[in-house]
Image (cartoon, rainbow, N blue to C red):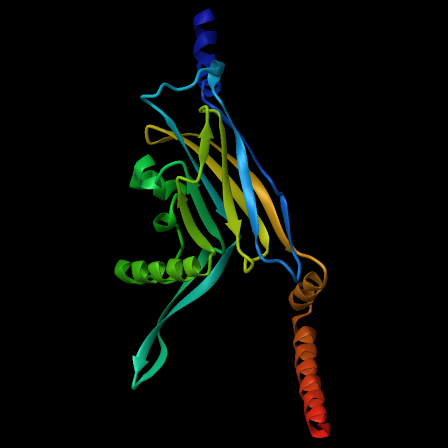
Length: 252
């Protein structure tokens, strides 16, 4: 009976023997107003090891923090110069590309895990699962994927920060992630991965909400809930402003 009980309890004991991550973030909500110029998130936490025993120096642990924005469908188009004019050429649509993606790590991710693990957990810009909507050949998909990543990297929406995660005494960690002014609204996630010897030992997630406030929130909700009326109002406002500018010009 005792032996049977030990066998049954073995999985539970093994689960308890794994380290646990206790993460947190400086802001659970980011509110975008007309004066919003971006934000800087502080992600921090602690690593709880079984029995309080830290790993030896021969097997140090690493941390990777990934902040993702809501996924969205996007079409990427290539430009081609035809008779001296740039025109749209090939296009490829993605069903679920993250609107924001930032990865911070204690070391370059390529030095922490192998390619397979990077692909499973989407650790790094070259490991994103973008889900193309068409069955284009792999070379074409790779070319468009690089183009999409490059476009969003230049906009500040995708970036990597190797060495940005600081680990203190092997227990406490912290890093900072920049949120640009052009960040989309929605539900974000901050995932933290504890890695040793190329294996993910623990993971934890914290949610972050990015939303508009004040007049910007009113405009965004109106455009989303009453698109037709919003479009008519925008056209009417443009016509009114144009007419007013013309009247002023005539008087001057």
